[in-house]
Length: 414
Ligand SMILES: [Zn+2]
Image (cartoon, rainbow, N blue to C red; front, side):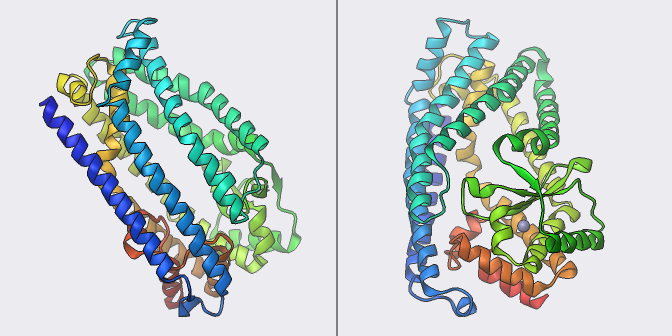
């Protein structure tokens, strides 16, 4: 049985890696093939140099992703079948007994730290190589280090206690531990929704009330039309890190606030900002946030149930290259290995997300002008150097938002 699992794992990982590399190559080829002509639908709004910049930016990002796909797969194989995890478990066993809470916590934290360290060069290259070259990066190395330290402090203050609580429940809550762990994770995630906007985000960015009186008035009229109450209208200094623009809602219930990136306010006209906000309001009013949370809770429950069946099976550990058996090791193996098996579910998530985007666009056209949304989208595509000629298959697999041409064609029919 353990050998069957080894082969199933290798086959699933190989299929996932091959598919991802194949999709990446398709994307590069498609974008390059359309590099020298702006599609007719955008000919009036996107200049050729901007279109070519978007193509080159897309290709540069895909190339880095291909290297990351191969590196991640190698690291995963070395950790599991290569025996690194077993070796690390042995090292921690010199300090703490195998079944103890501290052995499990130490092992899991060290593996996460190791994979984060291995991923660091690619992250640095993305920001200071690619983003810099295309003029998007506003981050200094100092800010990067400060962000990383804050992230580590947050992980230590929130992530480690959560991990210890999960491992404790696994060890003491009996056969139904997976249900208790699920309840804990759901509670934690809802708690984070409450504290992120008011306690965590201000740690990374400055939020100031929206000043522009014309825009404030427009937005307030829009909110009244849509029957939406919020705890304020803020501009975030997104330009501190990147020239990319965005708008979003943060928080739930009475804590919700509307946040506009300063880059967005600068680039879009008040009517266009209003249209973008109407789209975001659509996500909120159509309960997309809640639906996504519900889906992720259901997925977590199913995963934990499966893990509950696996923890007692010796072949689950041995088939993945580990001889030492403990509940934390089972959890760690599951976290590391399950993405290879669930990879082909990815397009389902993408499909749902695109459905929500179309619905939010439709909502926006009922409360703001469709033409303004269209203009805003084209400006954002151009400013963010998002390609308007993605490979259809690559896009269907990964893109949470429908391709530009499809989205704008749909807007014209509304
Ligand atoms: Zn959206």
